[in-house]
Length: 93
Image (cartoon, rainbow, N blue to C red; front, side, top):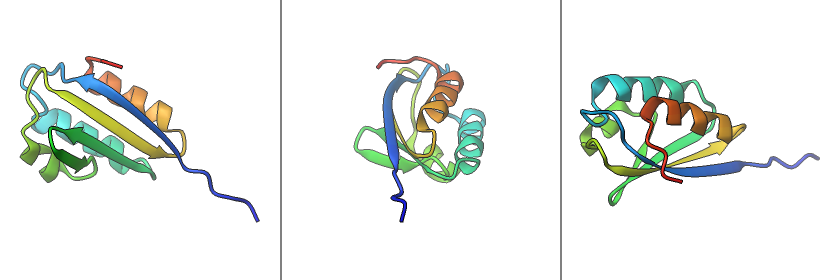
């Protein structure tokens, strides 16, 4: 039987949005996450945030210039990371 391979890609970003991740970019991020079958997690300070939850993203209070790490796992995670990069900007590594 075929083995399921789960690929994970992570990337750090500096949040380039002038107001940080507020309602509009959070909604765009959640929409992207909900259209992806895999998992997208945001690491910010000591929090691990499910990118499919707008309430968790907004409650995190991610400010402009903040350093976050995005971890995407599932099918084609690199393309999802690239979409997040377009949305948030500020690639670090």
